[in-house]
Amino acid sequence: MSTISEFLTGEHHHCDDLFAAAEDDAAQKNWGKADDDFRRFRHSTETHFEVEENILFPAFENATGMTMGPTQVMRMEHGQMRDVFAQMADAIAKQDADEYLGLSETLLMLMQQHNLKEEQILYRMADQVLGNASDALIGDMKAMAEGA
Amino acid sequence: MLPAGLSFDQAPPIAVPFRFFLTAPLFLLAAAILLVAYGPEMLLSRHMPATLAATHLLTLGFTSMVMCGAMMQMLPVVAGAPVPAPRLVAWTVHLSLATGAAGVAASFLWGRPVLMHLGGGLAALGFGVFLAAAAWSLAHVRSRSPSVPAMGFSIASLAVTAALGLTLGIARQGGLDIPYVQFSLLHPMWGLYGWTALLVMGVAYQVVPMFQLTPNYPKAITTWLAGGLFLLLILRSAAEFTLLPPAVPGVALAAGAGVFAIATLRLQGRRKRKISDATLLFWRVGMGLLLAACLLWLAAALLPAEAAERARLLLGIAALPGFILAVINGMLYKIVPFLAWFHLQSRYVGKTAIPNMKQLQPDRPARGQMALYLAALALLAGAVFWPPLARLSGLLWLASALWLERNLLRALILYRRTVALATAKKSD
Image (tube, rainbow over all chains, first blue to last red):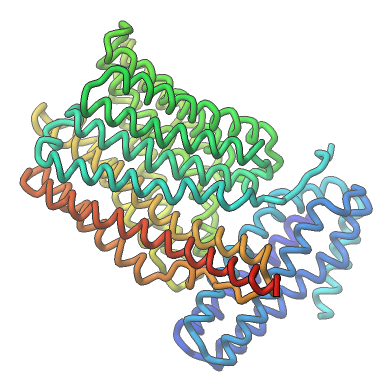
């Protein structure tokens, strides 16, 4: 069985692939495909956020007693990214490539530094503190991600 | 097991990093003015007074200035360890480096010992405070980021560089008896290779995959390269004072830098993100120049004396105004707009429209400045062979520095305007 780190880092990489595809479509002004690819990217990423917010973060908070610590900052950054998703969807609806590319540049920076903190700090801590409960948690997260 | 009060709140006040990034180009400008004023004589040798002055304006005033500011920003994110007392540390480091750079450069230019003591002392104070803060932060690291070891070796090299520089400064005024020739060779090596190139490596391990969605650097590189090179720097230094042949660690150092440059270019070639921007282009140019510097390093070791001196001068150009300036210039175009956006978004979202990163830092003027930078660099290299080109190159450096400052100020002005709009609406 894989670790929490491996499972959720894999999701990040999957979202990166979808992000790059949508950005390339927008740069080429291939709007039909951009719309599809962006929807897939947004859906996968928001599902990933929900899996973390509903399963991983509460388990982490329970195990550590830290409710105002790292998970709080991660939730706030999810909120920031959701705001940018909404603006990106508008840019696609308006077929405004400059707007979309400016937003995707912004999102990429935000998303990557967020992922960095999760992958290199939070997930590792989660693997440590959740120990034996990890397998069951990963099972729950998979089920939720697949059901979405 | 769990550190108490772990927080990801990684944003020190925006004034902390911005003062570093917006002051730095002014030192680039000052160095350019020297090149215009002194022209061809600066290319006779790296020991010409104006050349030493310009070099220290670049290293203390531009590269170290940006690197210290960026490290204070990156440590919390990359290492999960904030820098203590960020405002006080930033204020002290910034002011000491700025005045120290000016003092040291003026002393080289006009030969006033008091300026060297003052400037050297101020620069030492700035680096001392920075080293203490960065070491404290690195000692509290909670992350296994591949960047962390390289950053540690980099700041250790900064300590060596600063100690050598301070000693050289005192000895230059006749106050100290040291092996001057050896120290004056080792000081730039530890500064350019140790402090600067090792930090570029540490930062690259993190940001090259991040910015362009490339695969990660091979584990063998991130685990061993920076530490191995640090050890080679020690061996190369020891070779100055023992029977150890300097060529052995010397060639290995050149090869190590070459491995890093090639690995970076290959990763960038495999990036998932197709679109390119000024930062990516600056980094690719920088890696090409690093490769050129490696070859020139070897050439300087193999060529007969007169040709070797020319190769050393070209090596200096490829390394400092080349590789290092290109990489830092490129980074500024990512860091400045992102920080401006991040601060606006965190505080004023919903109160007014927040400009995105490309609005804060459009790509077209950044690419324009890069073209000017490349022309200035090419003319500087050309001036090694045909000195009359030096002043023209200086004029292009001057224009490039001004354009860089203009581009960074654009982001600051738009930041301020957005804050004004947001706060005006709030008080309605």
